[in-house]
Amino acid sequence: MENEKKTKTKEEKAFSRKLLWDFLRGSKLFFVISMLSAAVAALADMVSPQIIRMAVDNALGGKESNLSPFVMGIVDRFGGFAYLGEHIWIMAAAILIVAAVKVVAQYCFRVYNTKGAETLTKTMRDRLFGHIERLPYAWHAKHRTGDIIQRCTSDIETMKRFVSEQMTSIFRILVLLVLSLSFMLSMNWKLTIIAMLPVPYVILRSFQFHRKIGAAFLDCDENEGKLSAMAQENLTGVRVVRAFGRERYEKDRFEEQNEYYTGLWMKLATPMARFWSISDVLSGLQIMLIVVFGSWLCIRGEMLPGEYIAFLSYGATMTWPVRMLGRMISEMSKAGVSIDRVAYIMQAEEERETGKALTPAMDRDICFDHVSFAYEGSPEILHDISFTMKAGTTLGILGGTGSGKSTMMLLLDKLYLLPEGCGSITVGGVDLRDIQTRHLRRNIGMVLQEPYLFSRTIAENISITEDEMPMERIREASRAACLDETVESFQKGYDTFVGERGVTLSGGQKQRAAIARTLTQQSPIMIFDDSLSAVDTETDAKIRKALESRFGSASIILISHRITTLSKADQILVLDHGRIAEMGTHVQLKQGGGIYQKICEIQSASAEEVSA
Ligand SMILES: Nc1ncnc2c1ncn2[C@@H]1O[C@H](COP(=O)(O)OP(=O)(O)O)[C@@H](O)[C@H]1O
Ligand SMILES: [Mg+2]
Figure 1: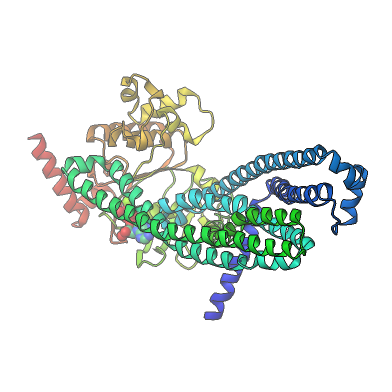
Figure 2: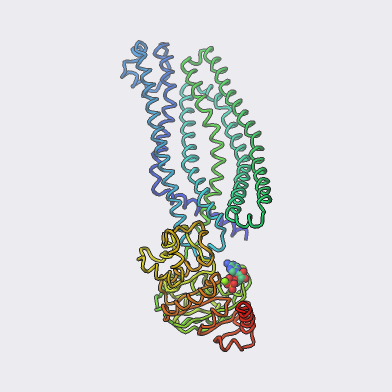
C-alpha cells in the first residue's frame, strides 16, 4: 500500500513536470531570449570593474598584471596601455559602452520576460478552462467552485511567477556568481576565498528563513481567502442578512476575522525586520573582510590597487543576488504545490465516449430496465426502477423531495453514467451507453430544477442552444413559455440584461426563461424537472397547453408536485424513496388508495378552500 502510494506520487510528479513543459509551448523562446539577455547584463556588470582595474593599474599605474591574451589583444588594438594612459577617455568610453550594453540587455530581458510570462499565463488559462469545460458533470458536482477558481487564478499566477521570476532569477544569480567568482579568482585567489566565506551561510540562512516565513504566508493567504469568502457570501446573501436584521452579527463576524488576519501580518513584521537587519550586517561584514584583507594584501604588495577596487565592486554587486537566491529557492517549493494543484485538475479525465457512439433516432420509446443507482460514496438512491414510456406520450412523475426524481433525469441525460450491472436505460432499444453523448443531449431538452441564467441579455439567455438564432424563434419559444408578455413590458424588451444570477427576474420568470430556452431546441424528448413550481397554476396550465399544441409528437417528462400539472399525463409514476410505488393514469391512481390518492385529496381540499 505504502509502495503503491509512493509510485503514484512519483507518477504525479512526472505528470506535473510534463504539464509545465507542455504549458511552456509558445513561450519557451521568449524565456530563452530573456535569460540570454540576463546573462549579457550580468556579464556587463562584471566587465566594468575590470576596465576600471586596468585603468588604475596598467594604464595609469604603469604596472604589469596577469591579463589573458584575449584582453591583451584588445588592449593592443587600441594602442597598448601606454597610449591608453595618455588617452584615458578611451577607457571611460569603454565603461560607457559596457553600461549601454547592459541597459539594452536589461531592456530585452524585461520585454521578453513579460512576453513570455503573459503568453505562458494565457496558455495555462486557455488549457485549464478548456479542460474544465470538458470535464464530466459528476466531477463538477464533486468540487467546490471557489476552489476551482482559485486554482485557475492564484495557482496559475504562482506558476507564472515560478517561471518568469524564480527560474530566471536563479539563472541570473548563478551566472552572476560564476562570473564574479572566475573574475575574482583571476585576480587573487586568497582574497576570493575570504570574500566568498560568508556567501554559503547567507544563502542557507535566507533559504531557512524564507521557508519558515513561507508557512506563515500560506496561513495569511488562507485567511485572506476566508475573509473574501465571507464578504462574498454576505454580498450574495444580502437579502437574507437584511430580512433577518443580521447586519450587526455579520459585521462583528467579519471584524473578528479581519482582526485575526491583520494580526497575522503584524506578527510577521518582527521576524522580517530582524532577518533583513541581520542580512545587512552580514553583507557589511563581507565588504569589511574585503576592505581589511584587501588593504593588507595591497600593503604586502600581493595585490594591485585596481584589483582591490574591482574586488570591492564585485562584493557590492553580489550582496543582493546572494540574499535573493535563498528566497527564490524556498519560493520554488510554493510553486511546486501550485503546479500539483493545477495538475490535479488537468489529470481528471475528460468526458469521453465509452460505447459505440451511435446516433439513432430519438423519437422512440424510453425504457428503464431494473435501474439501480448510487452516487459515489453514498448509499443507493434508486432501487430497481423499471418502466417503459411510449414515444410521443407524456410521463408525469410525482415523489417526495429526495426520492430520486432528478437523479433519474440526470441518468437519462448521461450527466451521470449508469455503471455496468446496474440495469440499463434504452431509447428505441439502444442502450444509452452506446448512444453518442452529444447526440443524446441535443435530442433531450431539459429544464433543470434550479434554472441558471447567465449575466447576459434575455435574448442571449434564451438562444443559448444555437449560435445565431433568428429573433422570431426566440419570440416564439418565449410565447409558448408565457414569457413574451413579461419581456415586452420591460423597457429594453429582449435586450434586458439579466443581472448577476438573474436578480432582476422573479423566480417564476426565471423558470419561464429556462423553459423558453429549452423550447428553442425543438427536441423529441423534453424534461421539465419541477420547472413550473414557481409559476402560478393558471400560467402552469397555459404553458402545458402551448406545449401540447406545439410539441404534440414529443415525449415529455413532467416532474411536479401539483396534481393538476400531472393529471393530463398519459402515464404517472409515483416515486417513493427511490422505488416505484405506483404507476398508472390519473383516473386509475386517483382511486388507487395510495400516495397519489392522498396527495390528490389534500390538494383538491385546499383548492376548494381557496375557491370558497
Ligand atoms: N451529487 C450527489 N452526490 C450524492 N448524493 C446526491 C447527489 N445529488 C443528489 N443526491 C442525493 O440523492 C437523493 C435524491 O436526490 P434527487 O434525485 O435530487 O431527488 P429529487 O429530485 O427527487 O428531490 C437525495 O437524497 C440527495 O441528497
Ligand atoms: Mg429534484
